Length: 325
Image 1 (tube, rainbow, N blue to C red):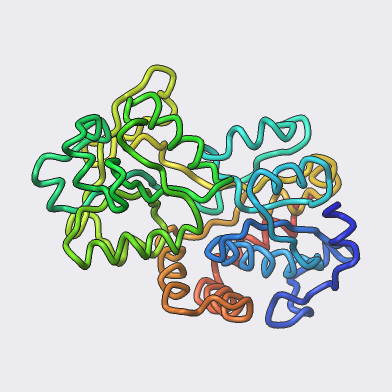
Image 2: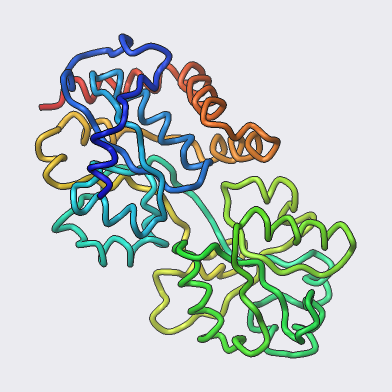
C-alpha cells in the first residue's frame, strides 16, 4: 500500500540545492523513507535526507504513519528505511514485523534518551518517590483530576511503544486499581498537566528527554523522576539514573533498513553508520517547535541550519559513504 503511495509521489529536493551532492554513488537511485507522526523526529530525518542527497540519492516524499505500521512498511519493502526505530521501546514492533530476516538496524543517529514518570517536586519532597507509592489510595487521590478516586497519569498516545510499557507497569507494580492511564494526543494531555502545575496541584505524567516538556517542567526544580520497582523479567528496562530505576531503559534510535535495499546500496549503510545528532540539539529543536515553528518548511530550514553549523561533521559522514563499495 505504502509503496503505491510513494511511487506516485513527487521526488523532492530536500537540501538547499539538488546539485550539492559530494559524490554520485547514488546517482539515478531513489530512496523511499517513512517517518512517524512526530514532528521532532522529522527533524533528524531531514538531516538524513541532506546527507543522502550529498551522495547522489533522490528522496521520495515520505509517508507519515504510526510506529508499528512504519516497521511493517520497511519489512515488506513498501519503504526503504526510517530513522525512528527506538531500540528499547520498539523491540516488539521490530520482531512482530519480521525482525532481522526482513530488516537491519544500522547506526545510532540519536543516543542517550531517557524516559519515565515524574511528579511535582512538592509531592516528591512530601514522600511520593516511587510508582509503587500509588498503591496507597490516599496518595492516588491527591492526583485525581476527574473525581473518580484514581490518580490521573498523563501517559502515551495509543500505538506508541511506551504505551505497552506503561500498561505493563500498572499491572505488575499493582497500581491498576488506583491509577488511570490517560491517553490521547500527547501535547494536549501534557498541556493539562502544565495547567494543573501552574495552579499548584499535584501532577503525575510520563515524558522523555529529548522533548520540550522538560524545558517547561524542569526535573530537579519543578518536578522529580519516580523510581519504578525492579520487576522479574524487566532487566533490560532497568535504568540507574540519579539513583533511581526509571523503568524504561536508556534508549537510542537506529535506522532500520529493508534488507534487500541495504544489500544493493552499501553507501547507505556506510552513511547511516556515521550519522549522529546530539541529543541536546534534538531537545533544542523540540523547544523551537513548542514555540510554534512546526511547519514542514520551518523544520526543513532548521535541518539546513544544523547542517551548516555542523558542516565538517557532515562532510566526514559523506566521505565515508562515498568510499563505500
